[in-house]
Length: 98
Figure (cartoon, rainbow, N blue to C red):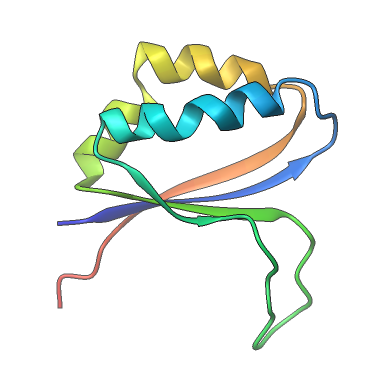
């Protein structure tokens, strides 16, 4: 069953972000992940105004694939490129089984 990583990012210092962005997509692909949403304008349909953070959504084949990606030595090394350059919140969410 598909599963999703949803990330909200606020870049406070651009150092490290270009390299991170360039490498994270291909690395996620090694674990079956692909971008569904990568930034862009947010249109608020209901609720409080959008706080300006970038929104990114990846689709993976499973929650297990997300865990393998997120805890892989390659991603832990890649994460260091963006650490200290912004604020990020990330969630892993299983897909709907209906």
